[in-house]
Amino acid sequence: MSVGVLEDVAKMLNSLLLDDKVSTALITKVLNEINKLNVSTNYWCNLSSEPYTQDVCDKFKVLMHKLVESSVKNVVVRMMNNEVSLEQDTIGNILTIFAKISEMLKHAILGSVIVYNGRILCRVKKAFHVQHSIALPGYTILIPIEYAVVLASLGYIDLIDTY
Image 1: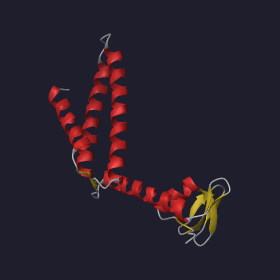
Image 2: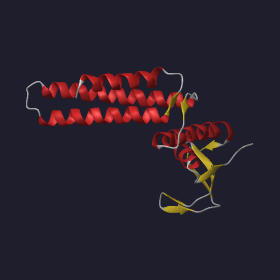
Image 3: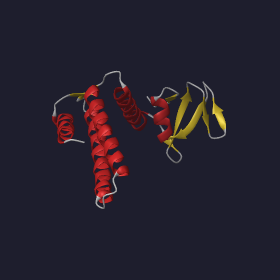
Image 4: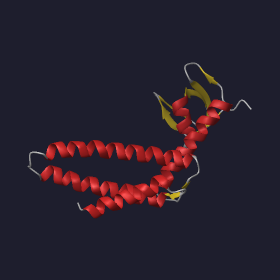
């Protein structure tokens, strides 16, 4: 690992965090570079027998976890603020699902009846397994809101509106 690699990652992270608009292509590139850096460092950590290696590697792991966690949180917030251009790539598809889940949660809170222990009334569009049975299209079911929001985002159910 060279200083140039670290400088490149720092520049990309700077762009990811500070540019007015970013693309999912840039996000993917940054995450790929972070992955390469992490893999090469893990390789060094596993091969080195120097006494300081374990301490350096442990601190590096903590730093990488915090870096990735804060980067992903930043990307999600920026996407929700329409500051990310969504392309049809892996990150774009993941962020699209986050956006749908966010919209469904808003829809559930504002337009549906949440009853009995946070369950919500839904109509099944596509068959899926629920507990010990299968929910078939056309059925009306009562399921926990956290499942309803995800299933509605994926097109398996419709939340029953109060409108």
